Image 1 (cartoon, helix red, strand yellow):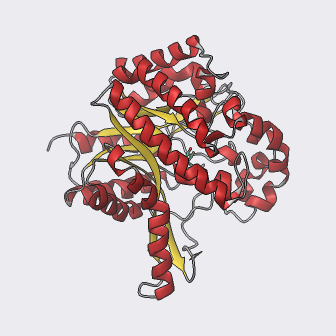
Image 2 (cartoon, helix red, strand yellow):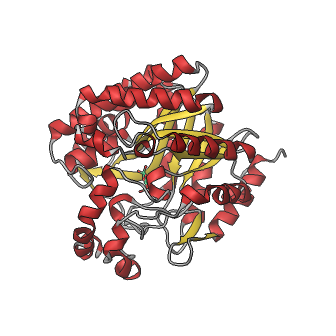
Length: 423
Ligand code: BGC
């Protein structure tokens, strides 16, 4: 049994959780909140069509059919309650928080900085450090000021200068308080869902736009890396890449294998290869194992699935860790990993198997320095809204945003203690 495994993790291993500003803060005004208000009733009306096939449908139906579900609104009021939330981290034996800063708060209008908001995040970082929690600052997690989106966002390479200026400001204000910075969250997912699939703002469906955005996000990271290193040379900088454990459904079948190879390169490695000289660690967000069948068709087992219908194979992290290590030979941080699990049925199992996957990779020499669970708290899940529950801590938005630690998380906290203890 996994619980019998030996404490293989060093004392300084970063056991953490991740949050993103837009998904928890509340009270934001960005291109995403504008889109939410315009699309909430449509998303509610089409919920049945979108989600009725999910095993969780009966449980989520009433929430998923409410327009309110699709509006981030007051969030979970993390903007005001962050100190209380940091105390929860301590209770959970976590020593790290990956958190986001909201560009639209800091620079609500082009070139105009909100000093009070700059101060807010300074205090936020100080409160983490006061509790001996390592702050890992994430600069961009898909949201942007309306003025930047109106100029074409990351589709227009001439706009990169605005992102440079933002990074410069962040670096000047906070870098000296930090050891780790993540520049961008999941460039592949954003470029593909916002510009190819057209599900997220600005809802384009154009391969050309997708490629432009993707390439500009390569440039954005490279430039950010240089700017930040100039400010603080020993800062550890990376991206949080969404990597999928892609496998052939029928090993040795020529079509399955070809699709697998191409997808592995296109989805997982293309971006990381472009920035291989501008990253000090590889950040991996792992949620999916996908089996390819025939010509680029996905055919996953139908069980077990989480509330979002995502097939769950936590041990699929292991081959990804090995592959990422052999390609880049850089320390690895699992920057996101978790399950949408409103009944807390799977979370403990998922975390147990994930720990085993990391132990196995570590025993084979893969240098993993941290694991951040997604997420610390139930949060706003983009176009799916409030019903998917990813939190180690449950949040009851209808009753004063009450926070309750889930049973699986109590187990996780104990496990961390044992894994960190010397034999
Ligand atoms: C994103 C998170 C999101 C999570 C679960 C990741 O791709 O970075 O913002 O909440 O998936 O859907």
